[in-house]
Length: 470
Ligand SMILES: NC(=O)c1ccc[n+]([C@@H]2O[C@H](COP(=O)([O-])OP(=O)(O)OC[C@H]3O[C@@H](n4cnc5c(N)ncnc54)[C@H](O)[C@@H]3O)[C@@H](O)[C@H]2O)c1
Ligand SMILES: O=c1ccn([C@@H]2O[C@H](COP(=O)(O)OP(=O)(O)O[C@H]3O[C@H](CO)[C@@H](O)[C@H](O)[C@H]3O)[C@@H](O)[C@H]2O)c(=O)[nH]1
Image 1 (cartoon, helix red, strand yellow):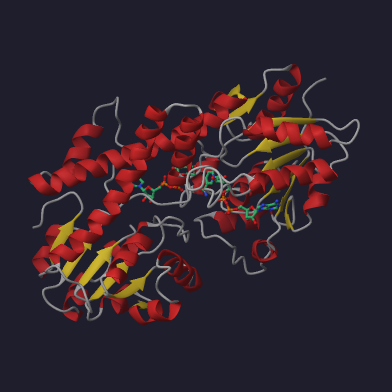
Image 2: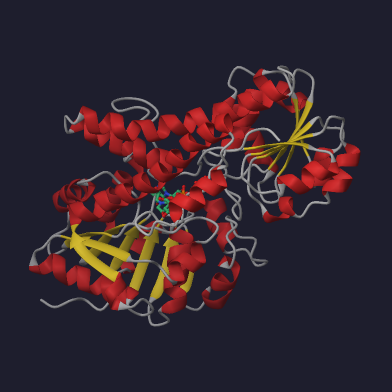
């Protein structure tokens, strides 16, 4: 046998990973036909939208899709046809934290992976390379292989690879064009190594070979969880230090800068914040916690769990600081929350710190004005309803007003809380905001975004994460 030259790829799952990743593969590999399939018809329709109103907001994505959709990039709901025609299948479905049953609240829900795997086995009529793109617990590839082999048609073989994705939302296109590395895990058998070579050849269209790391399957799966756990751990560490700064008069930016100058530590991912969000960090760490417990390593599980607990503490600590500073009550006061996405340059709200903040403000019976430049209104109502199950949506809508600009949102407010680091919040006409607010006018900067000294000169009382009150 020799490595198969990949000509047709299907990606199952047209989400935040499948969409951008495979659009970039199509852009960089004009000799490969790429089809992205999904059961969600509305999502596929949006990917095919004539005006390019795509289902996710990601800078640069529209240009990539525009350059190859209809040429060698296709979006479809016909999952079976996609599977049958492809030589290589990416499985890029969601793997959320389990909500019930064994491991609820920690383990990854692998139901979507299993359904996609069973579908591949049921409809494939030729050999396939099956690539785990989703983030999964260590040894999931083994379960996939068992399912595929037990249901394979005669003369139909499956080789399984792990190829976790490391893109971050908001910078996905740049991350895909110039990744730090591409990781491919395979069985170390001749067939496994051939499959690995086939996928490496796809990436080698635009990524230098020395950045394509090939390892064993289980190392690849675990490396993805490890990378996210270590990134999140840095944020929890700097956030823990931000609490000490607030109590001592040290400045977290100065501390992070001084610490990050050490080349063994490095400057990235040391930005203190109101807490990390996103669909991955919390989910993947809890997954690691569950894995550690299943392996009878409770000390290891406790260590990683603390990274998530610190994050929860940071979010509630910040909400409490708002209440404490506003003279211990925010009942009936108008609080403006700027930003609802979990970070700038995305419309994604999964695990966004803003959701926890607003939930806490609603508990205190505050009125909230909210503005985010990208998040859809329907998504905001859904997130707020889910986070405050004891309140009816009608009550929430009485307390929360979604505004169409920062200026509108800040009008008549007692305090502005910056929850997401959108660049436009830095550039607001703060003089005008000040004039329209009740006095004393407070700004709570949960993202180290605005120039606190400048705002103080205007007249604001500025409270910044990781700094004592000015
Ligand atoms: N979002 C990120 O930035 C990111 C980055 C790296 C890795 N990941 C991982 O990648 C995976 C996908 O994440 P995402 O954010 O793209 O999820 P997502 O929810 O945006 O997309 C998953 C898609 O899969 C579809 N799907 C589920 N089961 C299906 C099936 N059987 N057949 C066809 N379609 C099916 C869903 O309809 C959905 O559209 C997860 O495991 C996640 O942890 C995510
Ligand atoms: O110094 C920092 C850096 C990030 N954040 C916050 O951390 C969260 C996650 O940010 P980021 O990692 O940039 O975005 P994600 O899209 O969640 O990407 C992470 O999760 C993905 C899914 O697994 C991985 O592929 C990426 O490598 C990994 O960075 C966001 O709320 C950020 O605001 C901070 O508070 N301080």
